[in-house]
Amino acid sequence: MPGAGDCRTIRRSPLAGRWYPASAREIAREIAGWEDYRGADCAAAAVGGPPRTKALCTVPHAGWYFSGRLAARALEAAGAVLGPEGPEVAVVLGGHLPPGAPVIAYAEDAWETPLGPVELAPGLVPELAGASGGRLRFRTWEGPTGDNTVEVELPLVKHFFPRARVLALRAAPDRSAETLAGALLDVLRDRKTLFVASTDLTHYGDAYGFSPAGPGPAGERFREENDRAFVEAALAMDAGAMLNLGNRRSAACSAGAAAAIGRIAAELKAAGRLIDYYASTDILPGEQSVGYAGIVYAP
Image 1: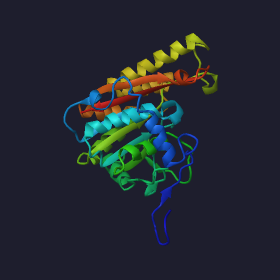
Image 2 (image 1 turned 180 degrees about the vertical axis):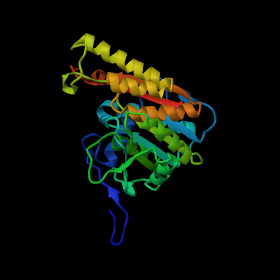
Image 3 (image 1 turned 90 degrees about the vertical axis):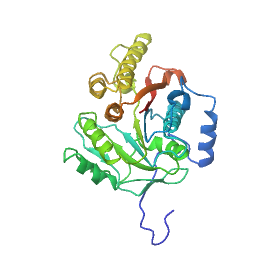
Image 4 (image 1 turned 60 degrees about the vertical axis):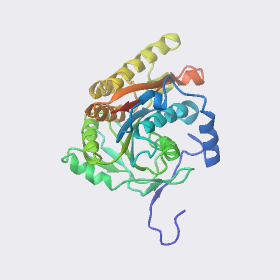
C-alpha cells in the first residue's frame, strides 16, 4: 500500500478472486498445477536459437479455469526467445473495442496484482502518439474497469517476468491496429521487448448472440472452422485477414490486438508457432463455446 507522501498511483484489481486467484499462494498453486500441461509445443522446443531482443505471442484471456494454462505456456515460450533475463518492457495489448475506437491507455504508475504491483510505463504513450505522426487517437481510461483483456494476463507476466515494466493498451479491430504496430516498433526498437496480444477466438452460442450454424455438432464444427481460419491468418501474420475475420465472422473478440502483434511479427520477419488450441467445451461441455489459441513468434 502507498505510504504517507507516496505520490505513486496504483490501478486496483476488480477481477482477482473471480477471473484468477486472489492470493499469491493460490496463484503459485494454480501455476504449479499446470506443470504437466505442455501444449503441442512449448518453451525452447517451440522456438530454439540464441536469445533475441524481441519476442511476441498471442494468448487467450478467459478466466484462468479455462485458458490460464495456455496463456502461461505461450508466455513461457515467448520468454524463452528472449533468454533468462526476460524483457525490459512487456507490451500487453487487449481489446473488447469496436472499430473506430481510440487506443485505450492507462495513466497509473502500477497495476495491482496478488503477486505485487506490476510497474507500468505510461510515459511511453506520448512517444507512441508522436511516432504515429498524429494518426493514432488515445483515450486514458479513468476509474475502474471490468475489462479482462489486459488484467487477466498481468499476474502471469508478473510471475514469469517480475522485472518487466508493462505498457498496457487496448486496440480497436481496425487499421489503426497496424498503425499502432508501427509506432510500437519505432518507440521500442532499442529495448528488449515482449509483445503480447490478448484475445479469445469465436464466442459461439445463444449466450453470445452468435450461432449461425445452430446448436449441437454443426455449431461446434462452425466454431472450429472459424477459429482455424483465424489461427491460420495469425500464423501467416496477415493483419488484414485477422481484422476481416474478427469483424465479419466474429472469429476473435480482440482482433485488433492480434492484428497489431501479427504486423509487428511480419516486420521482424518472425516465425510463428502454434503452442496449442482448444475450446471451453473441452474443459466444460455445454451449448456455449469459446475457442482459445496460444501462438509464439520468434524473429
